[in-house]
Length: 112
Image (cartoon, rainbow, N blue to C red; front, top):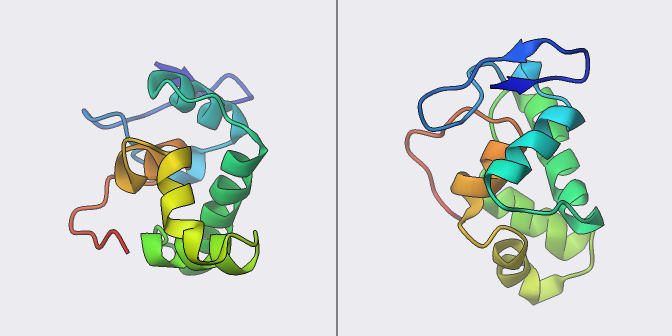
């Protein structure tokens, strides 16, 4: 059972994704990252914060290609961005990045 920074219980589906992405905060991300055996380093947070900004603006999870573009252009990874994304989230974009960033489980998905 997860709790946000105010101690409110956060509801998840049977796969561990948030039911309501608006219930996400950084405390929730830390707890979710522990379930994925990830230690969130500064680069993880840059990606997660980009994903949250994208969600706030578009009300849907960012497709992996948008995250790869962000990493290539804004974080300076260039052509290595896709590989770097999967180094940060080795079990996959949907399985780890989307989950830790508080997205609902995507139903149909292009991995970029």
